Structures are given as structure tokens and as C-alpha cells.
Length: 84
Image (cartoon, rainbow, N blue to C red):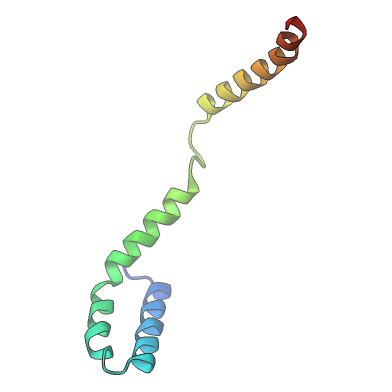
């Protein structure tokens, strides 16, 4: 299955064991929910990782234009202060 990652499965197992040790009565209710949540949790983690990658590998021409404009405007600031 594409949404199964061994790290996530290990984390779910560790969470299930932690619940089983801490709250033995709740383990029978929580562990099946953790098993069902593996795929949605994997999707959330994947979205977070991809969202964090930002513009890597994308066209950065607009960013370069904005940086050039900021540099130009910063150069204009001392000239404006001298006029005041």
C-alpha cells in the first residue's frame, strides 16, 4: 500500500504500546483507532513535509525581481532622508 511507511507504523505501534501500558482499559478501544489512522496520518505527514520544502526546484524569477526591487528601494532611502 502506498500510504504505509515503516516509520509511521513503528510510531503507531509505539503509541499503542504506550497507551496499553499507561491506560490498560482504554487500549482495546484506542489501538484499533490507531490502526485505522495510519493512512490519514501518513498523508498529513507527507503534506507537512512537502509544504516545508517550499519553492525548491521551482522558477524563482519573480523572487529575484522582488529582491532586486527591495535592493533598489533600499538604495533610495538614504537619498530621500537627505532631502528631508
